[in-house]
Length: 146
Image (cartoon, rainbow, N blue to C red; front, side, top):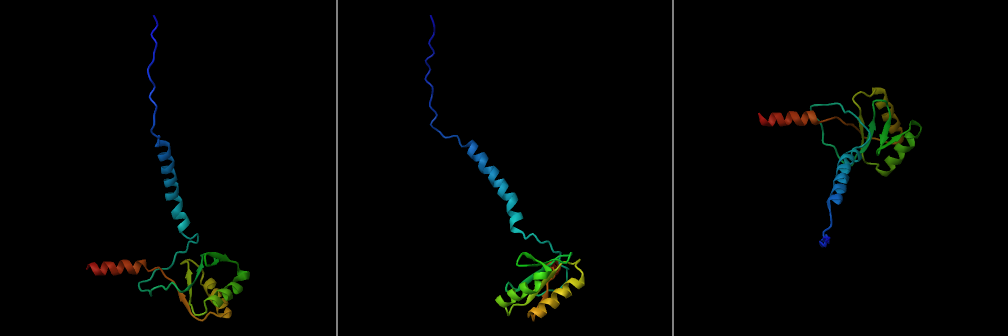
């Protein structure tokens, strides 16, 4: 006699979410790694450090000058041949705003002076030089603790 195996197979009515969870975790890791890269500007400028600084106003026209002498405005590199036109266009949009120059601490002084000269010819009147004030913030915090 043969035994007939008539076990009833149980139907699984639950959804297996393990692969879904794996995909979501991988996407989360990818976004966690790539988001800081997207949030930071691609221009690296090491500002010189000072003990005292003024507060920076969000209404300024910011200009970055890299140590190689490249000029960046509004996050875009400006070619030397288009510099005069770009400065004029920005100053027409924001005539009363000061031009804040964020020059790398290793930039040649000549590059900063050339930019300021071109900006003056384009109509800029007020200038400011940006510095890294993290040293003054740390010193002030240390003085407060004493």
